[in-house]
Image (cartoon, rainbow, N blue to C red):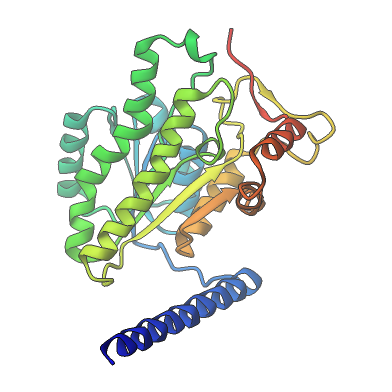
Length: 308
């Protein structure tokens, strides 16, 4: 009798889980068709690392136009100030700049203290800063590899350590991290970079689950991980794409990527490739046998050629 009760209990819970899965599949399809409502970022304190150029610069400009209080962090204060002045010319709004090497934990915490005192608690943290040296694996020197991991991974952790506690305290905030399509599939000549972008994916996914578990599902802090295709930020010095497909696979513009990131953040999208169709493509390709996956890679022939 006890065994029968256990079987019934297990079957009931499996049925409940199946209904929940079906509900969320239908919800996801609905949102794919009709879109998600965008939350306002007006008055939010948005901190962007690597804000002095490329995607970071466009994020700063576009968030400012939406009424956010923008905090620009970059190791190059001159380019940082230039972005801030450009924003002020476009829109009279609050924008702040701080020089910081985000791979340096001490500097990060010193800047975080200043920001809290001078502006307030950061509510949207965008870990955008990154570097992408491109060489054959055995041609990398140890300092290059260390630097890639310091900026592309450890900097995310230092920023989270500095700014996540206030979000947890208020149960309000959003973390955005820039990964890459190279964080979903390995790319030739980008072994250290690709490894760091896989790490960013794991960091974000695990941290989100930890907060959900530790808060018993009550955490309102949101996470968005972004996986852009090759972009015109200057990192892709020698991009290569199948000539037949080049017109269908142009480099992303920084403005386009920034707009997609902001839309994802405002709609609480957990994972987004830019363009968005790549996420479905990668999901489907993963079901193929390994040799078939390699044939798809050969057909696309998209990667970054090694630097001289």
